[in-house]
Every structure is written in C-alpha cells, then in structure tokens.
Image (cartoon, rainbow, N blue to C red; front, side):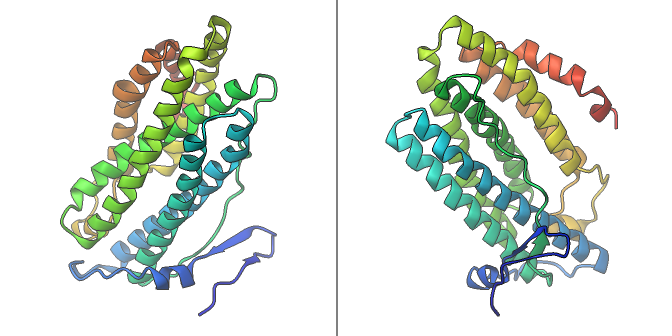
Length: 275
C-alpha cells in the first residue's frame, strides 16, 4: 500500500497516512468488543485527532522563520523544529489507531488559517504573540485535556498511545512558557500594554477554536469510552479550568494584564458559550 499525495475534486488536500500507520502499527489486545456505533465514534475521534496533530505541525512549522527573524536562541529554534516532528509523529500514531479500529487513515484537510506574522510590531513582539497563543495557550490546554483522557485509559494500550503524545505536548507547553519567561524582562511598558491588549484576541480565538471541537455528548457508552471517546462537556470543563487556574495566572506572572483580557474575551464569546 502506497501513500498518495492528492486533492479532492474541490482542490482540498487529502491527508493519507495509511502507509505511516502501517509502519507504526498499534495493537489493541485489551480493547473490549465494540458496538457498531462505538466503533464509528472511536474511528471519527482518532481520525479527528490525526488531522488536528497534522495541523499543529503546520502551525509550529510556520513559527520557525518568524522566531529566527526575532533572533531567538538556537536551543529555542531547535525546540520548535522538534515540535514539528513530534506533531507529525502524533498524527501517525493516531492514524495507526484509526487503522487498528478498522477505519481508514485518510481525511480531507480543512483550510488552515495563516499564522499571523504581526508586521505592525517588532519581530520579537510578533514572535511572542504567537508563542503565547500556540505554546502558552494551545499546548497547555492540550496537556490538560490529554492528561485527563489518558487517566481514563491508564493501563490500556490506548492509554500508552496517549502517554506518548502527552510527554511531547508537555515539552511543547514548557517551551512556550520558557520563551515567555526569557523575553518578558526585555519588554518595556508600551510593549506589555500592546501584548495585554492582544491577549483579548488570543483568548477569544482559543474559545472559538476549541469549543466546536468539543461537542457535548452526555454519558458516553462504556465500550466507546474504552476506545478513547470522551464527552466534550468534560473536556470543556478542563479547558476553562486550565484557562482560569494555569494560563491566566501564568501570563499575569509575566506582568501581562491577562485577567481583564480573559474577562473581555469571555464577554466577546458569549454566543459560543451559550450554545
């Protein structure tokens, strides 16, 4: 079986990881017998993760040139390059689970939002905006959600897959916070004020980006849960708890006005929150 590079009739790219999934084949000896509904839900869940991890690799890849233009240290640049490779490997692992569940590791890639370069500010400030959004926010949220999901599957083969992914996501989040800690002392008051204002957009983007991916399913059947299907309502609670208790305080420690920015973003996102 050969992985093909192709587009669908509309011109959208097709992510085909069947060959990579075969190389990273996952055995699921402890998976219970699944109903057709549970199997379908599990395949959709892991295929969605496959796509999301591939997109994360694209996002990290877009940051490499920007961080180089900001003259960040070589170990930071290599850490970002490592994150690209990690996310691609995660996509392949998720693809292997899709195949092990009886699905096909092929999916249409949605349009990818361009990572903003923020040309209206200095290269360092623009890089910091993206590092905060990607490392301090997105990756920190991913750590919390994956850790909660892994705890539910601990001791199983799928739990081991999530453990492998989690270890890398922890490193990615730590990289984001380390870069912020490295750069924060260099910022003047005007730059901190602009960054604090930017946080409103960054927080609102997180809400708009994450909540649609976390549908509220209610009680998930036991066999579906054992296959990695998680209720989005639970994940939403983890999302907001992480924002409130980890991300906002962490940004405040860097002398950014994160609390009022988070409150403003919630007010702006009221329609999404009530959906």
